[in-house]
Image (tube, rainbow, N blue to C red; front, side, top):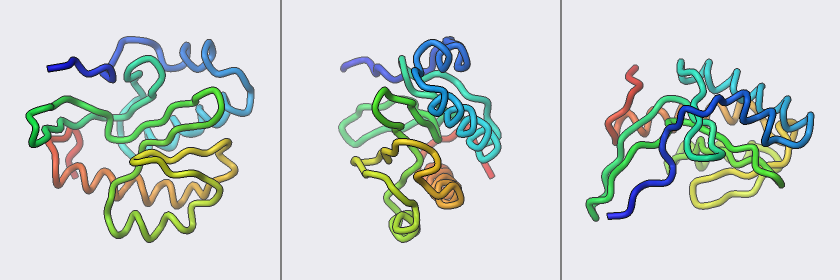
Length: 144
């Protein structure tokens, strides 16, 4: 079975932001997301793979037998836009997305250009719903 590429690393999150992120706005937005996600999860940021900043973790196992660990919440300050990993396929999440702001949706990832394009209170609701969902469906390092 293939080894997961996205695993927790020892890379310093703040050094990553300084060396990888190329604009002051994106650096500022990254620091704000770290502050918010740390507050929402109770976890400090950790690097997952080469570019994902994650908070907490959970263990997943698919019917196929593939399993691994992933962050509860996370984001990546990619070159063209942010990738936000705070979404679960629940009815509540689907309802609140309409108020998120200016974004594009991937399969389980929200893309946006800058933090001011999206509604932070909606991101918080999506994050809370995702943590709740992961707690109910997976083995998590976060329990209410």
